[in-house]
Amino acid sequence: MDALSDVVGIAPTDPRVLPLIETHLTLMHATSPRESVHALPPELLSAGGVRFFAILQEDAAIAMGALKPLGNGQGEIKSMHVREAHRGRGLADRMLAHLIAEARAAGMTEVLLETGSRPAFAPARAFYARHGFTECPPYVGYAADVESTFMRLPLDRTA
Image (cartoon, rainbow, N blue to C red):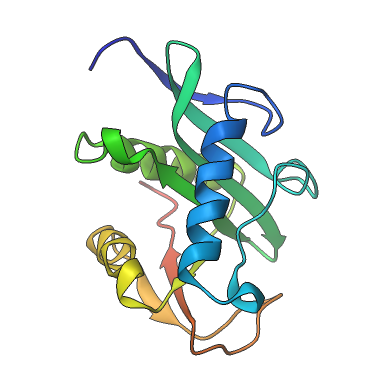
């Protein structure tokens, strides 16, 4: 994989990640009604204890993900995205493994996420299901929405 970085903690306002965040936000707004888009802009990806990570190729982010603490041992995975040209190379697996490891290290006992329910989000739902996530009811900060699928993964403290 041509000179890829490890997963690195980085500010979501760093110029190397802003184009990928913009691509992600554009895609989310193109595939869901405005009121059902829960992707965060850069300024909110650096607020409230959110930890943001990227995989860089040279000087550009090609994969990203964030972990938002929710309290009560829970964390939320936010804004996972791999640039389309780099999909199928295991980068999403690397990013998710990193986010789960960070959640465990922070003492979290469960990670949650919200993704879309439309067909465009089927690959994301299948990806998370392959990694042990199961559907769950809406959690803190969300209301039931036919446009959303909520998923959870209990964390084994010994893994």
